[in-house]
Image (cartoon, rainbow, N blue to C red):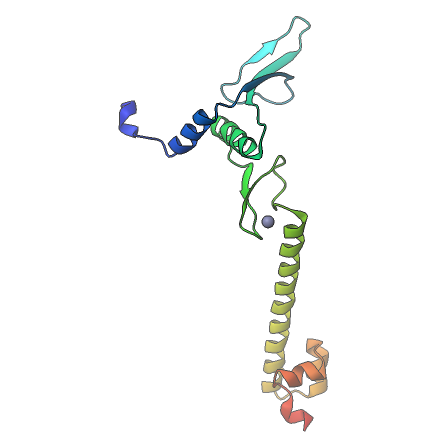
Length: 165
Ligand SMILES: [Zn+2]
């Protein structure tokens, strides 16, 4: 397939922005600690150690930092450092891939909500079980013992109303 038939890449906007930003490149020569990436050359120094060289754009502002990471991701094929926070839905850039939230506040908020959802689901399951037990003609004491729900909770849910009168 001729190259022209591919048309513009979906990354053209990003490429154009990066070109316009004219980020100065910095160069690094680092010890080879893991397998080189595809296309990444290794250098053998006279003392027998192996090195890799890499070029990175130098970022001075938050915008440049974002775009320098996008540039790296574009070149290396890893857009994983740009993530969407599951709590606030905002984009954020992370140095460590383990990080999934933009902030501690969002992380705590998300986990608190998950915990609350889990508690509500548990409660719903217990209430459903209580309704089943009531259908089976079980006593309030038995329902309470088997579901670990309180008398007030059962009454509030309209499950044990008739027992309580
Ligand atoms: Zn967030």
